Image (cartoon, rainbow, N blue to C red; front, side):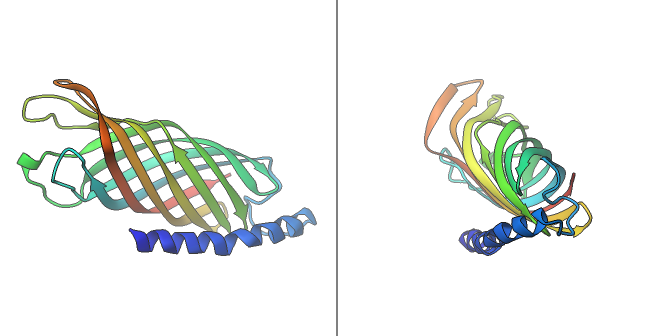
Length: 209
């Protein structure tokens, strides 16, 4: 994952300086992007497919997981700089076969709100999301019949998207989230010293207004 983070960081810092120049030119009437600086707000809907790793403190099994999601972002657009929030639903499944005795991590997660900042500089949209809510609910119970939920997440996602066609965005994202508590109906909630970590790289497609 370190290579993906470095690639996305390099793209971020290579694009960021042009935002200042783009702001000046668009203020003078230029700019071909249909999601540029004319609007006072930014709104998008998106879907993505990601694949990545997990780090499970309570098990020696660290499965690779696929994540499928749909979501939306709303933000104030101040001279091309974005600040706002979003919401998202995702489905999580194993990327490969797993042993039943190791447990299944198939599940779902609803994020009712996350915070986002970023910028629009034609033809790029860059967003950095901060995630602080959204339980990860495992679909299958344990061998004892307990329901397992990972709670109290904290993490971020960096997305870099390109406006390939008017309003239509394609790009990549990297996400790193750590859950601090594990709740099951048999043993109650326990704190995790190292947490339960999920990270993934995803392909993103969206439509922006």
